[in-house]
Image 1 (tube, helix red, strand yellow):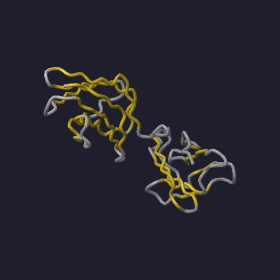
Image 2 (cartoon, rainbow, N blue to C red):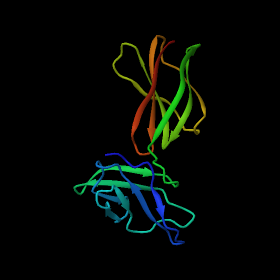
Image 3 (tube, rainbow, N blue to C red):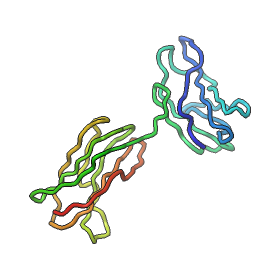
Image 4 (cartoon, helix red, strand yellow):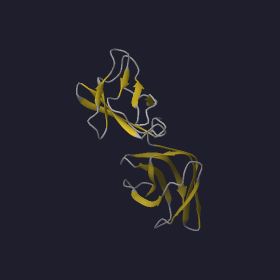
Length: 184
């Protein structure tokens, strides 16, 4: 079951509008709840169309919302949307990840392409042949999509090191987004 790409406002009331979404047929939820509210509504027949029971926002502002998709009364997926009604799945996309070494210091460099819901970049390292990672040897706070990052680390010894770059999102999830090897 997939999240719908957008949530739209229906109407033009100064006191807020109903929210609507269209889910793919036939794989759609039985009901949808707006997280943090008691507003749980079934879909309209077999059309895949959902309309909120309450009005939200104002005529000039739609609030960010999270729709909870329910199947058989059980929450199966959460779908966060931004103020524009666009699906807001946490994402960290980078390019040009590189590791360089000079004078016993390693520099990890990358360019961010997209940062949505990102809380931290985390750099881990391990000496090759060793099973466990040294976790969070360096961290970087997101600076926004299109930012260049150059983070330095000084390993405790010389040798061949594996590095990995993790993205930690505001919702608590993490993902390894790049890795590489460098000789110190």
